[in-house]
Length: 223
Length: 118
Image (cartoon, rainbow over all chains, first blue to last red; front, side, top):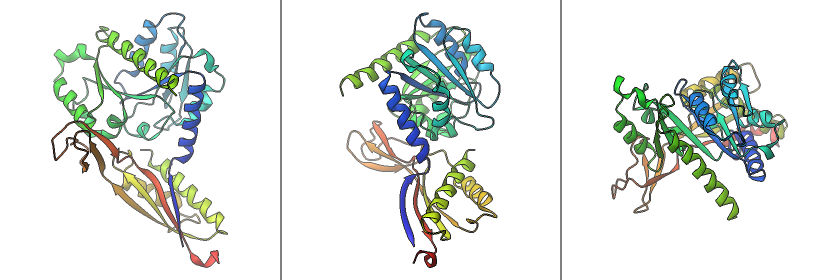
Protein backbone atom coordinates (compact mmCIF):
# COMPACT_ATOMS: atom_id res chain seq x y z
CA UNK A 1 0.00 0.00 0.00
CA UNK A 2 1.31 3.41 -0.96
CA UNK A 3 0.55 6.43 1.21
CA UNK A 4 0.96 9.83 -0.45
CA UNK A 5 2.86 12.09 1.94
CA UNK A 6 4.00 15.17 0.00
CA UNK A 7 5.61 17.08 2.80
CA UNK A 8 8.98 18.63 3.42
CA UNK A 9 11.60 16.43 5.04
CA UNK A 10 12.39 19.38 7.29
CA UNK A 11 8.72 19.97 8.08
CA UNK A 12 9.38 20.54 11.77
CA UNK A 13 12.12 23.10 11.05
CA UNK A 14 9.82 24.82 8.57
CA UNK A 15 7.03 25.03 11.16
CA UNK A 16 9.37 26.57 13.74
CA UNK A 17 10.79 28.97 11.13
CA UNK A 18 7.26 30.20 10.33
CA UNK A 19 6.68 30.74 14.05
CA UNK A 20 9.89 32.77 14.24
CA UNK A 21 8.88 34.80 11.18
CA UNK A 22 5.54 35.62 12.80
CA UNK A 23 7.28 36.50 16.02
CA UNK A 24 9.69 38.85 14.17
CA UNK A 25 6.71 40.43 12.42
CA UNK A 26 4.84 40.96 15.70
CA UNK A 27 7.83 42.66 17.31
CA UNK A 28 9.13 44.51 14.22
CA UNK A 29 12.41 42.65 14.30
CA UNK A 30 14.41 42.71 11.07
CA UNK A 31 16.50 39.54 10.84
CA UNK A 32 19.49 38.74 8.61
CA UNK A 33 21.21 35.35 8.31
CA UNK A 34 24.93 35.56 7.42
CA UNK A 35 26.43 32.51 5.75
CA UNK A 36 29.92 31.79 4.40
CA UNK A 37 32.87 29.42 4.49
CA UNK A 38 34.90 29.47 7.71
CA UNK A 39 37.25 32.45 7.65
CA UNK A 40 35.48 34.66 5.10
CA UNK A 41 34.96 37.37 7.69
CA UNK A 42 31.41 37.05 9.08
CA UNK A 43 32.52 37.93 12.59
CA UNK A 44 34.80 40.75 11.39
CA UNK A 45 31.95 42.22 9.33
CA UNK A 46 29.65 42.08 12.36
CA UNK A 47 32.32 43.69 14.56
CA UNK A 48 32.55 46.58 12.11
CA UNK A 49 28.77 46.75 11.75
CA UNK A 50 28.11 46.89 15.48
CA UNK A 51 30.95 49.39 15.89
CA UNK A 52 29.28 51.69 13.37
CA UNK A 53 25.83 51.56 14.99
CA UNK A 54 24.65 54.38 17.28
CA UNK A 55 25.02 53.45 20.96
CA UNK A 56 21.25 53.45 21.41
CA UNK A 57 20.60 51.18 18.42
CA UNK A 58 18.47 48.15 19.23
CA UNK A 59 20.64 45.54 17.60
CA UNK A 60 21.53 42.03 18.70
CA UNK A 61 23.54 39.06 17.44
CA UNK A 62 23.22 35.30 17.65
CA UNK A 63 26.46 33.69 16.59
CA UNK A 64 26.79 30.00 15.79
CA UNK A 65 29.87 27.83 16.05
CA UNK A 66 30.58 24.18 16.62
CA UNK A 67 32.69 25.04 19.66
CA UNK A 68 34.04 28.00 21.69
CA UNK A 69 32.53 31.28 22.84
CA UNK A 70 35.25 33.25 21.01
CA UNK A 71 32.97 35.00 18.53
CA UNK A 72 30.50 36.10 21.19
CA UNK A 73 33.40 37.55 23.20
CA UNK A 74 34.66 39.46 20.15
CA UNK A 75 31.20 40.80 19.33
CA UNK A 76 30.22 41.70 22.90
CA UNK A 77 32.91 44.41 22.91
CA UNK A 78 30.53 46.73 21.06
CA UNK A 79 28.12 46.64 24.02
CA UNK A 80 25.08 45.15 22.28
CA UNK A 81 23.39 41.89 23.31
CA UNK A 82 25.24 38.90 21.87
CA UNK A 83 24.64 35.23 22.43
CA UNK A 84 26.78 32.31 21.33
CA UNK A 85 25.06 29.17 20.07
CA UNK A 86 27.48 26.24 20.25
CA UNK A 87 26.11 23.39 18.19
CA UNK A 88 28.51 20.75 19.54
CA UNK A 89 29.22 19.27 16.12
CA UNK A 90 26.21 20.22 14.04
CA UNK A 91 27.33 22.00 10.86
CA UNK A 92 24.47 24.53 10.67
CA UNK A 93 21.96 26.42 12.79
CA UNK A 94 18.33 25.29 12.74
CA UNK A 95 15.14 27.07 13.73
CA UNK A 96 14.89 25.26 17.06
CA UNK A 97 18.31 26.58 18.13
CA UNK A 98 17.21 30.14 17.28
CA UNK A 99 13.93 29.77 19.18
CA UNK A 100 15.79 28.46 22.22
CA UNK A 101 18.43 31.21 22.07
CA UNK A 102 15.79 33.96 21.83
CA UNK A 103 13.66 32.61 24.68
CA UNK A 104 15.04 34.93 27.37
CA UNK A 105 15.47 38.01 25.17
CA UNK A 106 12.78 40.68 24.95
CA UNK A 107 12.20 41.06 21.21
CA UNK A 108 10.54 44.40 21.89
CA UNK A 109 14.06 45.71 22.48
CA UNK A 110 15.49 44.42 19.22
CA UNK A 111 15.09 46.16 15.85
CA UNK A 112 17.82 44.34 13.95
CA UNK A 113 18.87 40.77 14.68
CA UNK A 114 21.95 39.36 12.98
CA UNK A 115 22.40 35.61 12.90
CA UNK A 116 25.93 34.48 12.16
CA UNK A 117 25.62 30.92 10.91
CA UNK A 118 28.20 28.15 11.34
CA UNK A 119 30.94 28.52 8.71
CA UNK A 120 29.70 26.25 5.93
CA UNK A 121 28.33 26.91 2.44
CA UNK A 122 26.21 23.78 2.14
CA UNK A 123 24.13 22.74 5.13
CA UNK A 124 22.96 26.17 6.38
CA UNK A 125 21.25 26.69 3.03
CA UNK A 126 18.69 23.96 3.85
CA UNK A 127 17.50 25.46 7.15
CA UNK A 128 15.07 28.34 7.18
CA UNK A 129 15.59 30.39 10.35
CA UNK A 130 12.66 32.73 9.76
CA UNK A 131 15.08 35.43 8.54
CA UNK A 132 14.12 38.21 6.13
CA UNK A 133 17.19 37.65 3.99
CA UNK A 134 20.16 35.36 3.68
CA UNK A 135 23.48 37.02 2.93
CA UNK A 136 26.42 35.06 1.57
CA UNK A 137 30.00 36.24 2.12
CA UNK A 138 32.91 35.39 -0.11
CA UNK A 139 36.46 36.63 0.46
CA UNK A 140 39.16 37.27 -2.10
CA UNK A 141 41.45 34.67 -0.53
CA UNK A 142 38.98 32.03 -1.75
CA UNK A 143 38.31 30.96 -5.33
CA UNK A 144 36.24 33.18 -7.62
CA UNK A 145 34.38 30.04 -8.69
CA UNK A 146 32.74 29.54 -5.27
CA UNK A 147 29.30 30.59 -6.62
CA UNK A 148 29.55 27.88 -9.28
CA UNK A 149 30.64 25.26 -6.75
CA UNK A 150 27.94 26.13 -4.20
CA UNK A 151 24.99 27.29 -6.33
CA UNK A 152 22.45 26.42 -3.62
CA UNK A 153 23.43 29.11 -1.14
CA UNK A 154 24.25 31.68 -3.83
CA UNK A 155 20.78 31.16 -5.32
CA UNK A 156 19.03 31.56 -1.97
CA UNK A 157 20.95 34.67 -0.87
CA UNK A 158 19.68 38.16 -1.64
CA UNK A 159 23.08 39.72 -1.29
CA UNK A 160 26.62 38.56 -1.89
CA UNK A 161 29.32 40.44 0.02
CA UNK A 162 32.85 40.13 -1.36
CA UNK A 163 35.16 40.77 1.60
CA UNK A 164 38.90 41.45 2.08
CA UNK A 165 39.19 43.56 -1.10
CA UNK A 166 42.24 45.29 0.47
CA UNK A 167 44.09 42.03 -0.33
CA UNK A 168 43.29 42.13 -4.06
CA UNK A 169 46.79 43.33 -5.06
CA UNK A 170 48.36 40.32 -3.33
CA UNK A 171 46.14 37.43 -4.45
CA UNK A 172 45.24 36.03 -7.88
CA UNK A 173 41.50 36.55 -7.25
CA UNK A 174 39.67 37.76 -10.39
CA UNK A 175 36.91 39.93 -8.95
CA UNK A 176 35.21 40.50 -12.32
CA UNK A 177 34.97 36.71 -12.77
CA UNK A 178 33.59 36.37 -9.22
CA UNK A 179 30.88 38.94 -9.96
CA UNK A 180 30.11 37.23 -13.23
CA UNK A 181 29.89 33.79 -11.58
CA UNK A 182 27.59 35.10 -8.84
CA UNK A 183 25.27 36.64 -11.42
CA UNK A 184 25.32 33.52 -13.58
CA UNK A 185 24.08 31.44 -10.67
CA UNK A 186 21.65 34.07 -9.35
CA UNK A 187 20.87 36.82 -11.87
CA UNK A 188 18.93 39.01 -9.43
CA UNK A 189 21.45 38.91 -6.58
CA UNK A 190 22.86 42.17 -5.24
CA UNK A 191 26.64 42.47 -4.85
CA UNK A 192 28.75 44.52 -2.46
CA UNK A 193 32.52 44.68 -2.16
CA UNK A 194 34.24 45.74 1.03
CA UNK A 195 37.15 45.39 3.39
CA UNK A 196 36.66 45.02 7.14
CA UNK A 197 40.33 45.98 7.62
CA UNK A 198 40.38 49.29 5.72
CA UNK A 199 36.62 49.85 6.12
CA UNK A 200 36.31 50.54 2.40
CA UNK A 201 32.75 49.78 1.28
CA UNK A 202 31.30 49.58 4.80
CA UNK A 203 29.05 52.59 4.24
CA UNK A 204 27.45 50.78 1.31
CA UNK A 205 26.87 47.73 3.49
CA UNK A 206 25.25 49.74 6.28
CA UNK A 207 23.10 51.57 3.72
CA UNK A 208 22.02 48.19 2.31
CA UNK A 209 20.95 46.99 5.77
CA UNK A 210 18.84 50.08 6.47
CA UNK A 211 17.33 50.07 2.98
CA UNK A 212 16.40 46.39 3.29
CA UNK A 213 15.02 46.97 6.78
CA UNK A 214 12.83 49.78 5.47
CA UNK A 215 11.65 47.61 2.62
CA UNK A 216 10.54 44.98 5.14
CA UNK A 217 8.82 47.57 7.32
CA UNK A 218 7.14 49.08 4.23
CA UNK A 219 5.90 45.67 3.11
CA UNK A 220 4.43 45.12 6.55
CA UNK A 221 2.72 48.50 6.64
CA UNK A 222 1.23 47.72 3.24
CA UNK A 223 -0.43 44.51 4.44
CA UNK B 1 27.42 16.85 5.69
CA UNK B 2 24.01 17.04 7.32
CA UNK B 3 22.66 14.04 5.38
CA UNK B 4 22.59 11.94 8.56
CA UNK B 5 20.17 14.40 10.13
CA UNK B 6 18.06 14.40 6.98
CA UNK B 7 18.05 10.56 6.94
CA UNK B 8 17.00 10.58 10.59
CA UNK B 9 14.03 12.86 9.80
CA UNK B 10 12.95 10.60 6.94
CA UNK B 11 13.21 7.45 9.08
CA UNK B 12 11.26 9.19 11.85
CA UNK B 13 8.44 9.98 9.43
CA UNK B 14 8.45 6.34 8.22
CA UNK B 15 8.19 5.05 11.78
CA UNK B 16 5.29 7.42 12.38
CA UNK B 17 3.48 6.11 9.30
CA UNK B 18 4.08 2.52 10.41
CA UNK B 19 2.50 3.29 13.81
CA UNK B 20 -0.55 4.76 12.06
CA UNK B 21 -0.96 1.42 10.31
CA UNK B 22 -0.67 -0.85 13.33
CA UNK B 23 3.04 -1.36 12.98
CA UNK B 24 2.92 -2.42 9.31
CA UNK B 25 6.38 -2.91 7.85
CA UNK B 26 7.56 -0.01 5.70
CA UNK B 27 9.00 -1.30 2.44
CA UNK B 28 9.84 1.90 0.62
CA UNK B 29 9.99 5.66 0.94
CA UNK B 30 10.07 8.08 -1.98
CA UNK B 31 11.89 11.41 -1.63
CA UNK B 32 12.38 14.30 -4.03
CA UNK B 33 15.72 16.09 -3.92
CA UNK B 34 16.55 19.19 -5.90
CA UNK B 35 20.12 19.83 -6.94
CA UNK B 36 20.10 23.13 -5.01
CA UNK B 37 18.89 21.50 -1.79
CA UNK B 38 22.39 20.93 -0.51
CA UNK B 39 21.76 17.23 -0.04
CA UNK B 40 23.95 14.67 -1.74
CA UNK B 41 21.92 11.59 -2.80
CA UNK B 42 24.80 9.14 -2.22
CA UNK B 43 25.54 10.47 1.25
CA UNK B 44 21.82 10.36 2.05
CA UNK B 45 21.52 6.71 0.92
CA UNK B 46 24.56 5.81 2.98
CA UNK B 47 23.13 7.52 6.08
CA UNK B 48 19.71 5.96 5.51
CA UNK B 49 21.14 2.42 5.38
CA UNK B 50 23.46 3.00 8.32
CA UNK B 51 20.73 4.39 10.58
CA UNK B 52 18.06 1.84 9.65
CA UNK B 53 20.32 -1.16 10.24
CA UNK B 54 19.12 -3.36 13.13
CA UNK B 55 15.86 -1.42 13.42
CA UNK B 56 12.33 -2.26 12.28
CA UNK B 57 13.05 -0.15 9.18
CA UNK B 58 16.04 -2.19 8.05
CA UNK B 59 15.69 -3.25 4.43
CA UNK B 60 13.26 -0.50 3.47
CA UNK B 61 14.15 1.02 0.09
CA UNK B 62 14.94 4.68 -0.41
CA UNK B 63 13.80 5.92 -3.82
CA UNK B 64 15.31 9.26 -4.79
CA UNK B 65 13.75 11.43 -7.46
CA UNK B 66 16.56 13.88 -8.27
CA UNK B 67 15.41 17.16 -9.80
CA UNK B 68 17.40 19.64 -11.84
CA UNK B 69 17.11 23.34 -11.33
CA UNK B 70 14.30 25.07 -13.28
CA UNK B 71 14.47 28.75 -14.29
CA UNK B 72 11.72 30.98 -15.66
CA UNK B 73 12.66 33.72 -18.09
CA UNK B 74 11.45 37.20 -17.11
CA UNK B 75 11.52 38.35 -20.72
CA UNK B 76 9.81 35.59 -22.72
CA UNK B 77 8.31 33.44 -19.97
CA UNK B 78 10.03 30.24 -21.04
CA UNK B 79 10.65 27.71 -18.28
CA UNK B 80 13.75 25.61 -18.69
CA UNK B 81 15.72 23.01 -16.82
CA UNK B 82 19.28 24.02 -16.40
CA UNK B 83 22.68 23.16 -15.19
CA UNK B 84 23.15 25.11 -11.95
CA UNK B 85 25.68 27.37 -13.64
CA UNK B 86 23.79 28.51 -16.71
CA UNK B 87 20.79 30.69 -16.01
CA UNK B 88 20.47 32.64 -19.26
CA UNK B 89 17.33 31.87 -21.29
CA UNK B 90 18.08 29.40 -24.13
CA UNK B 91 15.40 31.04 -26.33
CA UNK B 92 15.91 34.78 -26.02
CA UNK B 93 19.28 34.82 -24.15
CA UNK B 94 17.85 37.10 -21.47
CA UNK B 95 19.83 37.05 -18.21
CA UNK B 96 16.69 38.05 -16.34
CA UNK B 97 15.60 34.59 -15.21
CA UNK B 98 14.47 33.43 -11.80
CA UNK B 99 14.78 30.08 -10.09
CA UNK B 100 11.37 28.43 -9.69
CA UNK B 101 12.35 24.87 -8.73
CA UNK B 102 15.35 22.80 -7.75
CA UNK B 103 15.62 23.13 -3.99
CA UNK B 104 13.09 20.40 -3.16
CA UNK B 105 13.67 18.23 -0.12
CA UNK B 106 10.36 16.39 0.18
CA UNK B 107 8.96 13.05 1.29
CA UNK B 108 6.66 12.06 -1.58
CA UNK B 109 5.26 8.69 -0.50
CA UNK B 110 5.68 5.82 1.93
CA UNK B 111 4.92 2.20 1.01
CA UNK B 112 3.81 -0.32 3.62
CA UNK B 113 3.24 -4.05 3.53
CA UNK B 114 -0.42 -4.72 2.78
CA UNK B 115 -0.90 -7.60 5.22
CA UNK B 116 -1.11 -5.56 8.41
CA UNK B 117 -3.49 -2.91 7.16
CA UNK B 118 -6.55 -5.04 6.52
